[in-house]
Image (tube, rainbow, N blue to C red; front, side, top):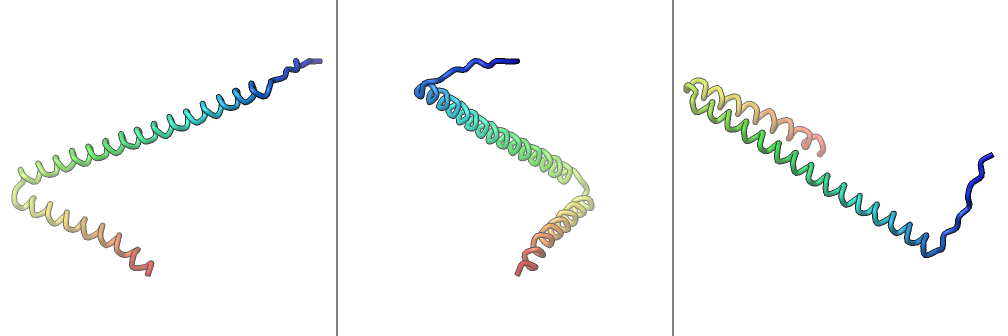
Length: 96
């Protein structure tokens, strides 16, 4: 048979323990929120950098291409813009 030791805490000591647990939990929550903001900022910065590098490659390709390839790039960009705008406008028209 296992016996447990009984112990008692004074109300002041119990209040100190509870306050320290709440304080540590709050500090951990603030640290977690700060880490989430820093991680989101890092991912956003990485995405913007990747888009910039992609745009640089496209511009370099466009500048060194023949006029026929440049015309193809303009047509392709216009078509993609049309498709994106069309897909964004259609759901808003259905909502009316």
